[in-house]
Amino acid sequence: MGPTLGMSVSARPPSQERQAKRDTTVQTRLAKQISTAEAELAERPRDPQVLMRLVRLYQVEGEFGKSLPLLERVILLQPHYLEALRLLGIVRFHAGQPSEALEPLKTATEVNPKDDEATFYLGLCYLALDRDDEASKAFERLAADAPANVDELYWLVKGYSRVSSAMLTRLAGLGEDSYRLHQVRGEYFDLQNAPGQAIEEYEKAVQLRPDLPSLHYVLGSAYWKQSSLEKAAVEFRRTVELDPRHVMARYKLGMVLLEQNNPANALKEFRAALAEQPGLVDGYLGLGKCLYQQGEYETAVPMLERYVGLAPEDPTPHYLLYQIFRRLNNPGEAEKQLTLFKEKEDKIKARKAPAIKHPGN
Image 1 (cartoon, rainbow, N blue to C red):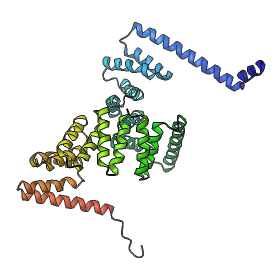
Image 2: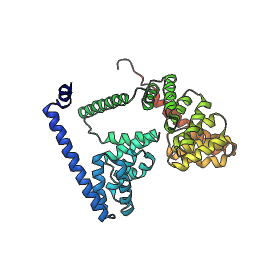
Image 3: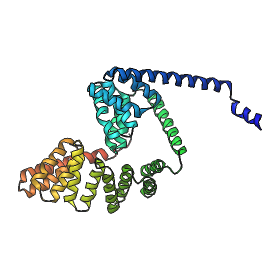
């Protein structure tokens, strides 16, 4: 048994032996480089270049946790160090801090709009924060930079699809009963317009990780789609309890409360969401609706007008403004808003209407 066991342990193909030796050599060399850089940092703790050298070595090693405090120190020393800012955002994402990663990544992409890696991580951060609309905009910017060539685009689509499939297989391999796998299945059923099955998967995910606000948020969103308002409100409230800065949970809770004829509490949620994210366009429409329902017509007008400026194609606020100006005894402005409402409604209907095929065409 002894010799047989010895053979089974050592009997590796020569190519694997050579690769193992190369890996060991690389790791040894990297460890020496890190030790040298750490010693240099001890002597020059306020030198941004020394700090960044060690950051890059830690990242090669996959030690994001070690590089994070160093990057934060670099930014304190040089607030406009662009490479440090973009790396800080990426490392914060890997450290499970997507909210804190947003600002450095936004700065990096504003200064260099062609920084695809920073844009990609910005999109991932928005996804992690359930801010899907903003995530889509980031990914659309990436897609816009892709080559305008049908063949290249086709192969890119096919390649990313294969990567996605491989990642999903790897996720499944980490555990059939993983909460993330249940979330993925829930999202799939959501896309297939099967809300009942989506809810079953999201509920399983929440049971496995009741501490994750994003899981309560997707479950609440699924309940809301089914018009289960009470259940949706419970999940959105739980999301906010776990993460008071969760903008979309506050916004959707406000919408649910509006449907439940509770504009006073809905108003609080919309205001909290807008305080956290002033660029939340639909939040201004929600505020206007709350104020309208409470009879605060004059206060509602600037909120609705602000929404009109941000979403000029939407007819909805014009009908509300029409109702408000009627109540404020301003028939001229009321008529103007009604006209705008009808014009924008007609444009939407025209876009949706199928083209009429004439005989012979």
